[in-house]
Length: 109
Image 1 (cartoon, one colour):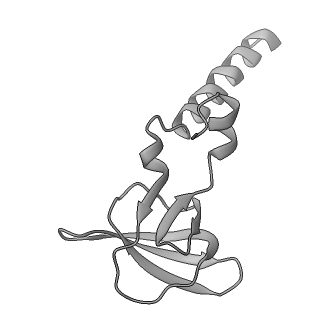
Image 2 (cartoon, rainbow, N blue to C red):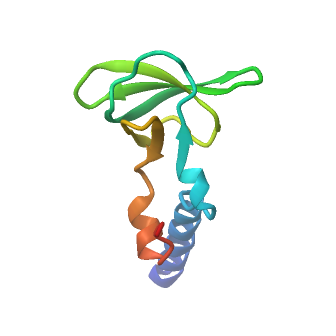
């Protein structure tokens, strides 16, 4: 294969990967914590996602500072490997993909 064809294939593959990390609805970037337990605010990585019947999802998180914890949320918009931030007001906010959305001019106001 000539070098120009390899570059074209590489660009197409890169565009496909980038399109998989883009979300269109800003509401997909966050969810509300519905579990009545205690949680510690901070950032971490989603290690598992469990579906709760009629209630939403449970996120299992590896926190940056405080170890691990799980929270129940109202929307199932998160996947394993994403980085999130738990806020003091009970929201889970997606951190991964932020720079791509800002680069495309779709930053949340």
